[in-house]
Length: 472
RNA sequence: GCCGCCAUCGUCUAGGGGACUAGGACGCCGCCCUCUCACGGCGGUAACACGGGUUCGAAUCCCGUUGGCGGUACCA
Image 1 (cartoon, rainbow, N blue to C red):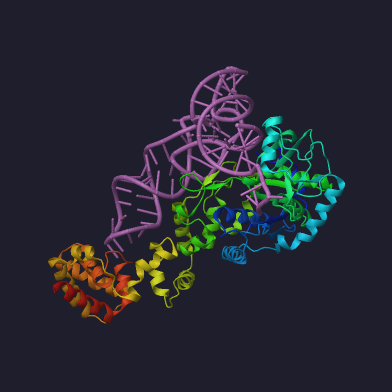
Image 2 (image 1 turned 30 degrees about the vertical axis):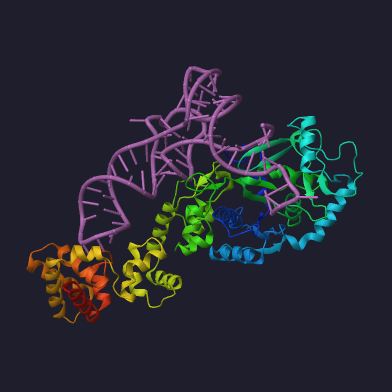
């Protein structure tokens, strides 16, 4: 399904360094779909068109022309999310609102050239127009009175004949017949421009070669193309990515768990794992690889292989992938990240013995917090393992451990193995009561590692408290 | 309503007329490993939305239906 099949001359364009952009609107947190769009653009900009050739450029633009919903806090939040994901940009951030003067000038030139006109038409006028001309007929606000209005919103004049064809690297050609298109409003009565106009001008001025964005913009593209055409400007190449949905197939939202980058971060996911997972949503490498470093992604990513189907965000698979990354990490690195995540210090040893048991950074504290915050309270575990027999065994274990000063992992194991042999019981009959005594629950890192890390004094003390507590 | 996009296991996907008994990954189930929880290993479960064409042959091409999604704002 290459570009060739779609008649898009991607290969010939690949000679020039790519200029791509990510253009979020700061109306809230950066959502997963936006993050994936940012990632795809970043991957494109960082891939070389050919070995040794110059890589592309990623322009960051903030589309803040919606004055109601755009806030500086939201802008900062989006920038933060991109930084956390380690998706850096080469130019910008450009604020769309800073470009109002340029937008106004271009708007004026279109008004003067007759490509645009003012119209006071209301929604009712549009409705009436359609009743007269048929529902399939696009609205023409200058019918019978071309250019005679001084007031009102500015509409772009859509040609009566022909069609605008969007050449899309992922979808091929999509044809939009002009008769069906309403003359789009491109500026408000006060002269401030609207999204579909601003985007076209900003992409043009930034020299964007490839517009890679969500599929929700596909229907907007002919409007932007018509603006460029009215200006006699060249067209960029487009690529519309399939949308991302939640587990129920509906729009992604907080109800589906972590839906924003910020929530992913708080849930203890690693940025490199998120990048890997996001890359797999709507794209797959030709060798079916699943675990891919960011370097591999840069190397393998190809717009031509992006899927056309919408994808559902599956947090379970992200968890699995995150676990892979956690286990592959040097223990010191994991410790550093855990310390940053929890705000606690001195986690190196606990991190080391927890590494293969956690999938996210958030899993760590419930598993290993007992080393630092004391035993947790799990009555069920106590009832099960510290019954009469369990207490007896635990007392034996205490005696055995008290007889040695060497609390190295191997030594602890030797002592407990010997005890087990002497008592002729199953390993768990000793380990579980001991585990509950020092951790408070039946789940912890390995028992030898845990006892060793806890040290002689604290271990014996916790066993004593456990025996005393249950006895009372 | 109108315009447009999309349709393979529960999920992400491979596939692009014969290599399909439809492959991989997550999940799930079973077994092995095992001090708990995990990790790991092995095996299994599970899909071409439906109906018509075209063709010797269709998951693959065409049309229709159904379904999902998007656009249709003086939002982005």
